[in-house]
Image (cartoon, rainbow, N blue to C red; front, side):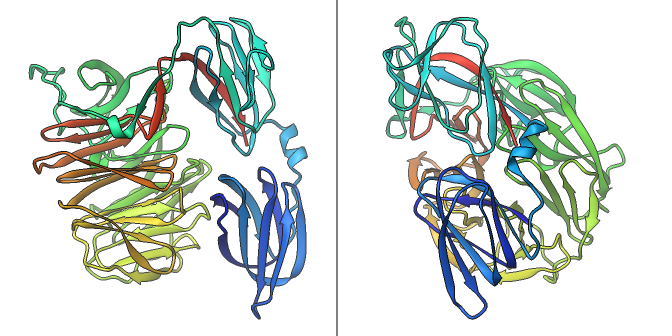
Length: 487
């Protein structure tokens, strides 16, 4: 089986999987592999991308890297009939568009390292210099304005320019200000009320956002001060929440005109293209849904039916049985990097590694009356939101307290290693293992949370809107659109 394993620098991530063959399909640099057999005997070795091992039957595999990275590893009883070199001959299986910033006389990372990336293409509007982290005018490669530049690299790309027109403006989480909710006249089609949408979608090629309002997808200014008009799609996602993968694509089920059947919509926020895939009959029952970070696995759990899953764009298919917790409500779903699906109910956190054929349950520390579930990409643990003043983490074996708040927790959202958590009195922003707390003052309802692929985060309360720029963020640079070809 092919596993997507998230590694954090200096920490082992272990996969419990019996097999005889290990193949490192995609990885950056050297890794340490620790293999344990059924008798507890441990074998440890160094491995790199493309390296394969055949061993006596083992029970567990743990991997460690000196840097954070997302890896692809084959662990099975049978060898992998695959060659990375051959696979690249047929081209990439995805295109990702991003926007980087280039600053005057100061080298900055234009594009981070990414395992599995084959090639990047960019065309700057002004002359820039490209290179590595030690980039300077003397050692950089000059790229002229309007020149189409293509390079095959998985590494980080740094850039700078020399006109003096783009000095960096730095903001930090310690100086983030509270932005009052927009005071727009409540005329039809223009007012943006806190209750309008539970999700804002960032647009990579502009400073606009997208939101659902009144049964339509609409364009909104980045400071939430203006409704810029309809974006061409009519319909409301169920619960308005949705999910965003690492491409920045938005996904959510919507109800069809029958009121029971659903379609799964996917929105490309750059092109505004919307695709819809038919799903099964919901029978009006409570449900939860999730999408993995890569956007390849879409899953929904229906209370009286079980799982329905779509992998790699295939049609949705019912798969599995219902969990044994009688009288539960499904409060959240998440898909971890090893393709295990997790389901949060009133009293249990369930997991299935076989598409819902079997479920293993873990009792929650408290009865949950409303909540949520996401993957902390920094640790690989699950974050479990409750309606109390405690938010828990779960490491696959046990729960522990992760955060406490003076007010009750209400919403949680994560993207690209950043997590935003809102309670009635405080907002928590988590990045790189660090937690920053913003005390908002008087208690009020947290209506929506969002982290965009451009780095901004939004928390919408009844009485205030807080816009978070990130732990450290630079603004004011020359924007450069980049297309990446990835496997």
